[in-house]
Image 1 (cartoon, rainbow, N blue to C red):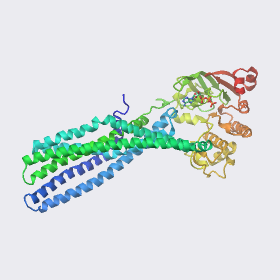
Image 2: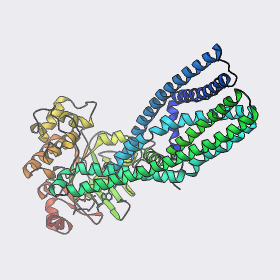
Image 3: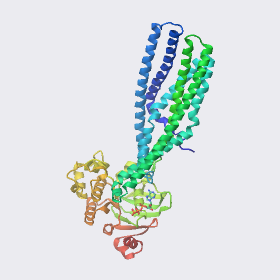
Amino acid sequence: MNPERGALRALLPVLAAHRAMTLRTFCAALAGQASLVALVTLTAHTVGTAVVERRAPGAGTVAALLALVAVRALATWREMDLSHDLAYRVLAELRIRVFDGLARSAPARIAGRRSGDLASAALGDVEALEFFYAHAVAQLAASGVVFGGGTVALGLLDPWLLLAVLPVAALLTLAPVLESRGRAARGARTRAAAADLSAETVETVDGLRELLTFGALDARRERLRAHGRRLGDAQRAEQAWEADASAVRDLLVVVAVLGVVLAAAHTFAGAWAPAAMALALGVLAPVADSAAALGQAGGLRAAAARVGAAVRAPAGAPEPAAPRGLPTGPLGLRLRDVRFDYGGRAVLDGVDLTVRPGETLALVGVSGAGKSTCAHLVARFWDPASGTVELVPETGPPVDLRDLAEADLRAAVAVVGQDAPLFHGTLADNLRLASPTATATDDELAAVARRTGVDRIADGYDTLVGERGTTLSGGQRARIALARALLTRPRVLVLDETTANLDTEGDAAVSAALRDGSPSRTTLLIAHRPSTIRRADRIAVLESGRVVQTGTWDQLTEQGGAFARVLTR
Ligand SMILES: Nc1ncnc2c1ncn2[C@@H]1O[C@H](COP(=O)(O)OP(=O)(O)OP(=O)(O)O)[C@@H](O)[C@H]1O
């Protein structure tokens, strides 16, 4: 099924939380449209009276005209105010829902997608929906009511007038439906081009250093230019169609005008003839506006589909319905017959691995063996296709990660990667990222900073580290990421090449400090450097999706085989 079908309708329930405001916007739109129809009708009648019957308007008529002008002006202002207020509230909510969807399904969903593309979905597509919420929903409903009421009035006044208006109204309403597929395709082209350009721009800015180093800036500029051109072409195609559609709508209204003039001249005399014509055309005007709005909204279906998909994204690792608690004390880690793939060949094909409480186990293997994948499963970024990942208390049964509440899992397990990103802000902000409620005291922060060497990075904790830590070296970033994890006091710590960027001395110092800091903590250490691996209590070798060897450094170096191959590589 076409995922864009009904995509806009599927986003209507967001308005449910703003029912009162939606209703007020509808009332303002209704008052604005109805007062306009009344105003043009009364004006036509007044002018007709003056010109045809040579009678000046009475005080009552003038007062009614002034009142209608005031109502129209007030209602228009109120509608603009309310509809935009409503739209901006809804968009703010949608942005958060899109973010929640990404967070819920990330990084499973993010894998393979470009961050600029996601940013475009989160911001550009949501922004594009402003038209739908501010200018379409309440206005279409109001137009329907005005047209319905006007149709009844016309029918009572003169069925010929109705006959002149109805076919054109039907064609105007039908046109956006008939052209919806083409509109959606053109809109999708624009949104896709905008997303590509956004992805390309983000990648270019991120990789400026590399592009400069390899002299690839000019080629990249050309690519950006080509993407910009593609977006421009898509936007022009949309606009050209819009201009044509608008001309066709105007033509249809002209046909209606001719019919209305004929019908009114046939039935009415004196000042009532222009009044009836004005009423008939006044009733048709909201239909023409609605047709334009419907057409424009049709172009937003691709944006709505992308936003809807992000909002409804299933959780990569769903929360358990009845979470189990974790006993206090040291926790071991066990992977039991774990199988996992990223949609292609099996990356893990029956991994069995045990890390005892308080033990440090080094997981080694050649590049691409699946070590980081194991770390991601322990962090529960994804669930295994089969098998279990368990936390094993010293006493009591093991607890499957799938049975743990998210907060309990995050409190027990911390995973630090090789290039953990830092965020714009101070060093203290970055260190306290995991405990924003400042559960870590200043003394604790200072102790952890000392242990990880973070206290030697900057003059003070108020130092700005810059977006993504670009002002820091790789080793400094690694120390901060490690300190950040330690402040959460994890019982299981997974270090995925965390100290690879430190020099051998720094690596040794951090390892010693880690061990002294909390001897009961269980550590799964992913490393390539022999001196780092050697410090672990035990070593497990991952090869062809399985753990093929385990033992101490001395045992494994004696055995040779897979471990020897890893060391040689
Ligand atoms: N998000 C992903 N989507 C698809 N395939 C992936 C993804 N992440 C990793 N892979 C693939 O899974 C395999 C294992 O990757 P993984 O990163 O776990 O290996 P690794 O042992 O940690 O490697 P390295 O030592 O180089 O970091 C590789 O073939 C990799 O290409």
